Length: 489
Image (tube, rainbow, N blue to C red):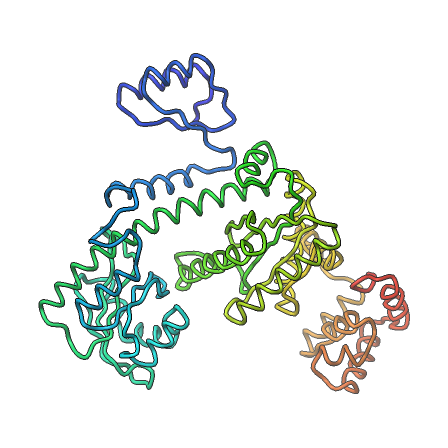
């Protein structure tokens, strides 16, 4: 870090060569002079360039993942414990045969990674787990209350779990944490008829070590691939000097494309230190993987990555601008329909980018559309940047007012003060009336009150706020006739 000048790099390469270092990483852009190339050749130290936007923390995380390969043997696609590397389903069946019981292999968030046969011998809770590919929340809460997870994560021996006091779990379980050193990778769960014998207990402990090797191998490959793709997508969407190379590596050179931005309702709560943090992170990654599969069926060159709290998709869209927008809406809507209520998400759609240079602007539009959708709490789940242009400007104005410390004045201030003192909903009433362009029937439905009650509240709005609603109604009709989605301010 902090090394920029060619002479410094030359000296450092020779110094590192004496210390038998494998590589030196310098931040790009960096020009490899003749002297630098000679020093790299003579010292035997590889010289690597780090992308401008990448952080050293990302490099450290990637190297840690790659170094795990050294602990689990040859990285070629051979076998571990007699089974093809990464085939957790075959491994689950092997463990089930050793224990004579149906088995699931789960990650740290109780998401099912693989399961064996003979699941019909278990109970309703196991059936729900297999179908949903995740342990039901009620079941995990019961296990947490009984201290099962605490015993599972603290100890190194299998934990026997008696049936819970409900109708879904009627068969006992034996569980064992899968570890790599001090890190817990997941767990193995077997539905048993009673406590395991000493021989089968030892068999489960031995099997967990093999499961750990397979899980490490899978994670190493998946993590590197995801990080690389996330870096390429992020660099592409940010624009700048590194974007052309990233676009070329994604295979998107010269192709018109649209950016989709997917976000989950519920805010940014992916902090791993919180109770629900790991599960929230896993949910976002699961949705990102599902969107990647969906878009690859639509357009094989689509690129998807989870960047922060948002999943971005770059979808090549050949054809006219109008057709592209229509198709992008259909693609986004179909994904949310297929995932159903299991994915509480919204998708913002950016404008069409005719080539790679416009992808940054398309991303900005997708972000604005997504922000409006999330702010509206699920009233709509898909929108283009054009659909919500005025709503986006209103949010920008709110940000500006908050940044300057502005406070409400005039009619709005009077309505806010009245609501605060009388626990009324005059501001909400006015908002519904404006959103409905002065249509009392539609506005009363938005407010979930009878039209007569809404009419009374509307009169109170006019009295308390000292507002001429006739002028507002005229503005609403003019705005509606002009094709806008919201009354003029």
